[in-house]
Length: 228
Length: 245
Image (cartoon, rainbow over all chains, first blue to last red; front, side, top):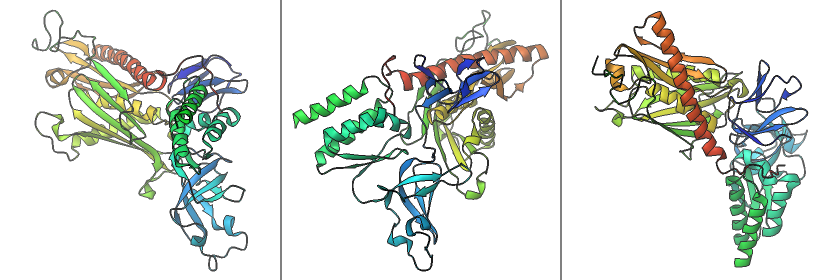
């Protein structure tokens, strides 16, 4: 990988290299590759991509997201997944194949205002994303504190192979459920510890593009524990 | 005409023919908007807020293959010397339209079908060239909102004052000068997305004026870049490790 490069929309990334393909947030104009977002360039063998530093959440198949039920019909729930598209959770996904709109009452499972963890089953931008809760650890979330961060900062919060999030969980003894859509649920038995965890999350959100962040977060978490 | 241009070629506000007014751009000034910016362009003071992409209401307005861009250029009642009626005037409706058309070629609207992007341009204090300043600030706010763009849009006017082609017309020059030509430009793609002309120019003057306006756009573009770089990368220490998922 070449040294880190910061780009703005329209910036020329490479010119006249037919082997590099435009990947995420990169467009091809003639034989030139331009960025379409504010972000950091990543050039690999497969092509060129830009990791964006701002923007809303666009669903991707397989993402775990945390959403809120905002409406339901006889056949499905509508879920706000912090995106420009509403999530669609069909009742059959919850009640099974034998679901009958006449017999089964959707509000028995999820009511308006309930927060759920779900996975994106299908999405192609032409229709609203299809959600599922049929997996372990998915479904209604009954307790915890909701924290919203910018969806572009989620990969940084998780860290390499989950290093960052695991460190926070271990040091604060809280559980943090991360939705790719930037919604997090922090649960724990100790209110103060939860407070510290949220503080660490905010710290990562603010300094997502700075170096040695892991060390600084670690220091902050240790500092708080010593003080207590 | 001599009032607007001295013998030595100095303009009414002390500038030379090829100088811009002082420009200041700030990014991310509004917390509740998805993207925002503030621009001071001479005496112009303009705030821009961008919301979206988001769901369209009413739903029948949505387009199945791309996002809808809505722009509102609005002057606050205290932005001019005599109170302006806050209701949208004929002029504001026109500027809203040309702003939308100036920004549309830069945005990749096909990436967000069935959604809407709202751009609100509020003029707090007005001077000549507020449409150009509004477009400049709107493009920065759209980049701040993280919407896929082919390029930024930089806008600047040129015109004819006291018989000379000059850059960046101010309010007095606009009212008493001979011609005013606002231009919006996509600097990397080298495309013009807005070209208006109020006044009379010969074919040669027109060419000179357009080239001067584009050179002004390039200067404005550098200031847009600087503002965005400052917001996003000033705290970044280069060469550090970046542990991502």
